[in-house]
Image (cartoon, rainbow, N blue to C red):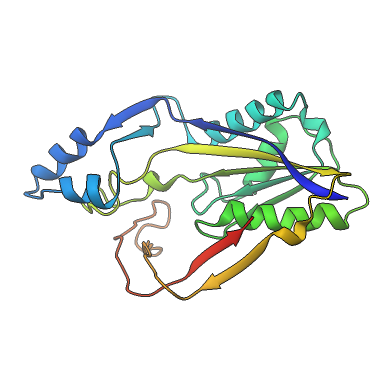
Length: 227
């Protein structure tokens, strides 16, 4: 008995934006960010949201796409896990909204997780263990998507232009083969830390979050998972 990653699919924004837009944007601020974008960040083009698109829409489309690829329906899923650092919705949990959009059964477990950039890896490990221990659950749908661009400082070259929009969906299945969850090992290393710090002015703009800045710090956590 084991757990298998059976299917995976990705859905991204439909608007393609090249580096030229951001180079010109920061040139007007007397900043040359070509080296930062191309050599440091490795950016060339990114998929952004077009008019009428949203991060939640990408999430739903990724979920529908992976279900179609697996020849499954929402009712065939026993748990839905949504992984995000910056979800478009805070309450109710986005997984509950996904549950509705994908027409899942009433007895499906819905859970949102935030484990920073390792969120889907952490979700995969935890749900693998859950499937192995559960007598009821056979399949889990995990979807990851972030709405980073909604809160970044447009005058900070470390943030603006660094992110695109995409959602990834995977299906885990309990199988008879020996895909042991013991092959998943999580390790936390205090080695190298690049952390974007988002600060919120809750008191001055309670209905309109004010994210002040993104900064580089010198030492932080790295999560790695060995599959």
